[in-house]
Amino acid sequence: MADHDASLPSGMVAEPDIDALLQDAIDPALLDHSDTDENFSNEDVQRLTTAWTNEKQAPDLLPFADQLVGDLTEMVQNQAQMLDAIQEDNTAQAFTVMLYQSEIERIKYLLRSYLRTRLLKIEKHAMYYTSTEDYISRMSVNERNYAQRYRSLHEGHLRKSCLNKLPQAVQALDEMHGDIPMVPEPNLQSAVICRVVRDIGDFAVTESETVEMKKDNIFLVGYQAIRPLLAEGHVELL
Image (tube, rainbow, N blue to C red; front, side, top):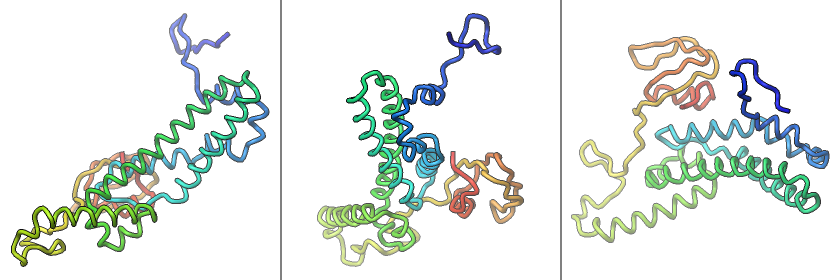
């Protein structure tokens, strides 16, 4: 019989903890695969969640989490194969398998959304990213190949539909026309919300304003100011 939470009104039962259910339902056969099972509750999934959130909120492309994505992709594949084998051998473990499959789907969703978010950014600023060494180094090999193909198709479309009909002097895509660049850049001055991960102390958020950044403080601040802190893992975006 389920234990009652003393903090809840009489007759009400606390919702079950999924992690506890997983732990209680683990069959000894599952424990034999400790090298991969431990990844369900280790820091990798949390790191992926943080990388995904940072990527969604940052106005420019962040460095690709190559090792993290590779490790989690391999783990998900191994877990899926393992669960298929267990389900075939022991139908009594159907509930446990269902819980693990739900966790696998959650991780797969994070991976897909993380990669899709990056591709949308690459498509939006493909010409700029593929012309900037810093951003080229932030992409995976597949992303660089995709960005180059997308840029080639995009430039071909622009020239065929518009640029070839304009005077030669304004056909270049990599020049400035007045103060307006022909190749749009991400807006690094946009505002973001960040949480301080560790004590930083006094930090200049503008040329004239300094704030004290303590762990768990939340700030609305210009992205350009906190880019170095984000790169070093001192803050995370919300």
